[in-house]
Length: 94
Image 1 (cartoon, rainbow, N blue to C red):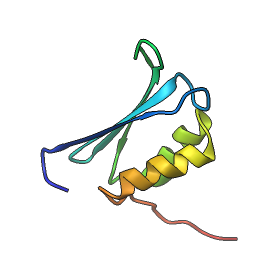
Image 2 (image 1 turned 90 degrees about the vertical axis):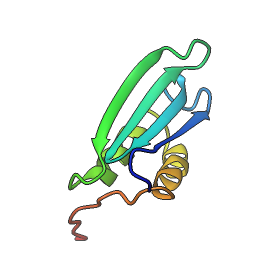
Image 3 (image 1 turned 180 degrees about the horizontal axis):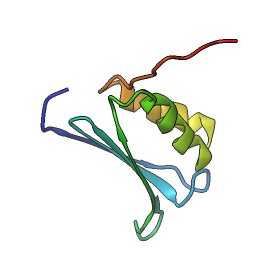
Image 4 (image 1 turned 90 degrees about the horizontal axis):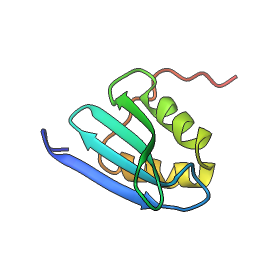
């Protein structure tokens, strides 16, 4: 990832997610996820996550799944991780 380069992608999904549109921006160490209204692109929800925070991956997945579906969460996370590696922190399997 190049420093100070903005990576941006808009996913027009429809009724499967809140508002219908998810816009994802990556700039340096900040990941911004916006849920927008399908017709007007009005902002409905926004979450900013530091890529290097100890639970960045889980915060991102939780936010996407809470307001969408696991399927679209996986697709968006795949795009994000094609650009940056989100910190997964310490995870224990019990």
